[in-house]
Each structure stands twice: as structure tokens, then as C-alpha cells.
Amino acid sequence: MGNKIIIDPSEDRLTISKRVSKLALPIIFSNLLYTVESGVSILLVSGISPTAVAGVGYSASMLWFIYSLMALSYTGTSVLVAQRVGAGKDPSPALLWGLILALLIALPLTFFGPDLTTALMVQFGASKEVAEVSHQYLKPIFLFITVGFTTNTFYAAYNGYGDTKTPFKIGFLMSLVNISASYLLIYGKFGLPRLEVAGAGWGVALSEIFGLLAYLYLYIARKKPFPIRSDLRRDILLKMLRIGSPTALERAITSLSFNIFVGMVARFGDKALAAHQVGLRVESVSFMIGFGFMIASTVVSGQNFGAGNYKGLQRGISTIAHLTAFIMGLAGVFLLLFPREFSYFFVKDPQVVNLAVYYLVIVALSQPQMAYASIYSGALKGMGKTHIPLMINISSFWLFRIIPSYVFIKFFPSPIVPWVFMSVETTLRALIFYLAYRRTISKLTSNTIN
Image (spheres, rainbow, N blue to C red):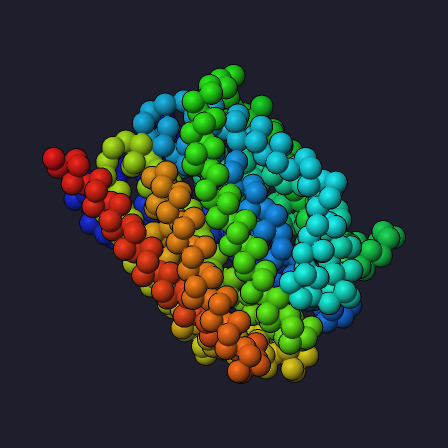
């Protein structure tokens, strides 16, 4: 059953790399499409004002906090589908409960999401002008947020099953819808109303609607990736809550912490905030590569864990980690060599570009470390050990990033200070994740031998 990615411990690393890359590449391309969408949104609104750039960029950061709630259904669905496929069991119950949880979580956000999000922005240091722009962008997104949560739960089921090509194809079409609709509605082309920043939000909403319709067609008409059977077993729900809750809590606190961190940058003005958002957009190309392999590591870990193949799990994760670090290291080299050129692609303001160059040079040095942190985190989640990333991510973020930044900004008032500690924290977090993963996998393999 399913697209099993069961690793033979004796397989050579080149063969494993090819198999994992085949799984990861569609995920990477899907996330790169998202990066392109975000970049185009920034590019399109840059013709309005720097405040529009800061508002749309900061909104995207805040949405990570809101979407962290989706991790309960997304992670639970992805991990349980992967584990049940590896064990040769029907994955239907995991998807059904995932969809129910997605709707229950998203529905309240439809009504108070935009106001809550922009209120938090102001608390974190964003100007009222940025918050007003953000509210315009977020309103249509929250109006259809139940659609977005449902679409991502279907996406999680496909990934856990081992079919990453279909979500990529749907994601590609969603990107076309998003970019086209955004362009037409931001500037009011072909007789459509000129909505400016709100038009970018409608682009996101319309693309999610298209995505949901595509997934419903595949499941109802084509029975893909697996036929859904009406099976709402209580034990599956409890297991999903046990696996998904720590990840949802982790992402909520981490995203909230990240926005507190961004708020430190925002206190240096809209141009510093805009530079941070531009830097994030450029770096996201490298990050999305790591994110794609992280999802692949969760699938490989989940399926091999479900099959009881712990030695194969260890061999597979080790290979993925080194491969990802090599690729992201190369991306870091490009960030070091061409920071100004990349920045100018998104914004023309020389002050914003100069600050973005500092950001990119600093983060370029921590790209391999980010790779290792992502892969070992994904592996632990695939094994169902989601409480470990919860503890590591939260403690690392505050101890090594936020608190030192807060202290040193008082002596060196510059946005460069938090950017430096961001890179330092990524390095330390990678080391902690490696030690946690090694301890967990050692227990599993030693129990197998015994």
C-alpha cells in the first residue's frame, strides 16, 4: 500500500539520495513556487509604497503564527498517514480526523483573524500605517481560511502517502491563479476594481479555493491517493492529538517569538523592517530547499518507523541531512557573493538594499546548520516524537536569539544585532537537534538488537 520509501540499511548513499530526491524535489519546487508567489506579491505592491512592502511582508510572517494552529491537523495527518502506510494499514482515518480538526480550528479565525493579527503586529512594534495596510491584505485571506486549512490537510495526506508529485502540480496551478489574480486586482486591469494591497490578499484566497476544488476532484472522482473509507476510530483521533498538539504549540510559540523578534527590527523604522522582509524573501529560496527535504525526512522517518525498520531510518536520515547541508551550503555561497543583486530584485530604495545586504551576508554563514536542524527535527516528528522539537525550538529561540538580542540592542542600537544572533542561534539549535536525534535513534536501534 502506498508509495513506500523503505530504506535498506546496506544501501549506498548515492542510491538513497536519488530515492529521497525523487520524493523531495516536488516538495521543494512546490515551496519554491510559494516563495515566487511571496516574492511577486512584494514586487507588485512595491510600486505602491515601502509601507506596502513592509505590511505585506510582515503579514506573511504573522500568518505563520496563525497557520501554526494548522499544524495540529497537518502534522497529525502527515505523520499518521506515513506510519500507517509503512505498517500496511488503511490511512483513511488519519485524513478524516485531520479534515474535521482543520475545520474546527479554522472556523473561528474567519471572524476575528484580521483584527487579532494586526493588533499583535502593533504590540510587536509595527507602525499603525503598516498595520492598516496589513489589515487590507489579510481580510480576504481570513474570509476563506477554512478553505486554506482544508487544502493543506489534503496536501499533508499526499505527502505522508509518498505522492509528492500531485501536490506540486496542484500547487503550480494555484501559483498561477495567485499571481494572475493579484496582478489584475492590485492594479485594476481589464476593468476589474483597483484594490491595491487587498488585491494581493484576494490572490491568495482565490488560489486556495482553486486548490481545494482540485483536491476534492481527485479524491471524489479519481480516488487518489487512496479511497476514503468512513472510519472515525477514537484511538486514531487521540494519537493525532498526541502527535499534532506539540507541533501546533511549538509553531504557535515559535511564530509568536519570531514576530517578537521581527518587532525588534521594526523598532528601527519601516525601512529596516522592509529590509528584513526582503532578506527573508531572498533567503527563502535556500530555506525552502531545506523545508522540502525536511518534509521528505518526516515521510522517510514515519514510514520506516511504522515498518519497524530503525536501521534503515537511521541510514536514510543521515544521508538526507548531509545532502541537504551540502545544497544549502551552496545556496549560502550565492548569498555571500550576490547579496546586493538579489536585494535589488525586490526593492530599489538604496537604504533598504544596504540593510538587506547586511542581513544576507550574516545568514549566508548559517545555511548548512539550518539544514541539519531541519532534517533532524523532521526525523523526530516522523517517529512521533513531536514533543522534542517543541522543547528544543522554543528554548533555543529565547535563550540564544531573543534574550541576547534584547540585551545587546541597548548597547549597539542596530538591526544588525538581532540578525547576528539569529545566525548564532541557528548554529546552536542544529547541534542540540543532532544530539537529541542521536539519542532517540540509538535507543531504537539498541532495543532492536536486544
